[in-house]
Image 1 (spheres, rainbow, N blue to C red):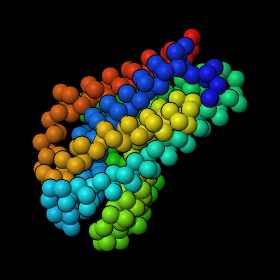
Image 2 (cartoon, rainbow, N blue to C red):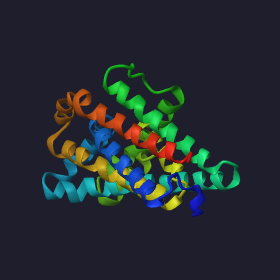
Image 3 (cartoon, rainbow, N blue to C red):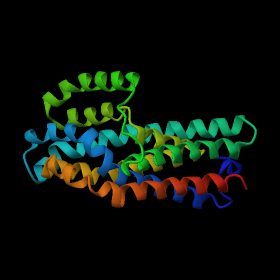
Length: 238
């Protein structure tokens, strides 16, 4: 990639900051958001796998590898899009900075919802229809209950409409690099895995116990990550 499109004077600082921000956002978001959205799909796979190591091998690893595949490819596509726009438009750094600002804004919205300062509105008609269609398509994969089906389920459900995912992809586009975008989204995926595995092992009740963390830990962490993206965006103006 042309280094002129990097957001900071030291490219690796920008890349590490972005990857770290998305990792932390995935970790926080998996407690406050992914647990409710993806938890039912994880729990649906658990009965066939049993408990303990069998559960991990039989259901959760293939599913998360499938999600990781989708998210990583989407990250590469987003980073490639950012790179292409930055190279074809004037003020390339400003273009990338705007992507980061968009990602920061979406993360901040999640934080404000966690703090109870914004209503948690239901998704729009288009997003709801897309989610319903994906869930309907995924139902046969849940019935099959094997590793290949689990992987395919993860790939398919990686496209579920999700505000947290949109913020991460906007930030990945702001990297201006397909490779960095892919790595950032791989980090984002990896950080969502522990919470979902905990739900698979302990059941949906653990998600309810985590709700109290939203105000004290999760929302502030989301706000900090939004601030990190803004710092990277501001650095792109220099």
